[in-house]
Length: 206
Image (cartoon, rainbow, N blue to C red):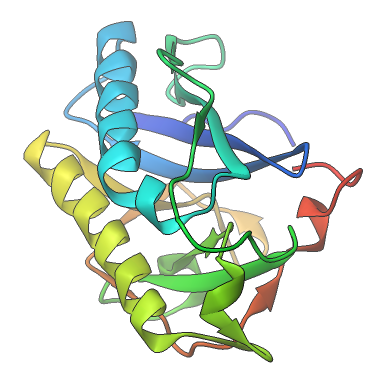
């Protein structure tokens, strides 16, 4: 797809490894102006702090974070930054291993507005085996995941930034006037049924 400029937006990729397979979560962050290399570095470093304080304890040691990559989406060849100090870094969940790569918990990202364009999803990987029974993720674990993602949203707000859903298309056509941004205002697990991300299986790509 041709590049579409998203003014003031930094794309953040939290890149990890699970069972030798590269896995990733991606979010968009709106800053106060055209993103600089310094903005990208600041956001990446703060995401690393968040991961260490909120995610590491919820995933087993077989799940690693490799780097956090942030880039400007304002121009095609814009600034970027990568945080990798002390990485790869493993999870510290103490009991048992992780569920298979494809097993994920879907957290719904809400913006207070209707329509598919105004919602997003975070597929949480590395769920501990002892937190899944049949196809259900433990309700307490679901609450911990939501709390971790809420902490991320709060952190970004403290940086005078915003976690946003970026919508480039409407009814299958490019949006007139450019992309529209929706601030993430609420995060929830609609249910505790385990989801599947087949591309995270070994050999299929992140």
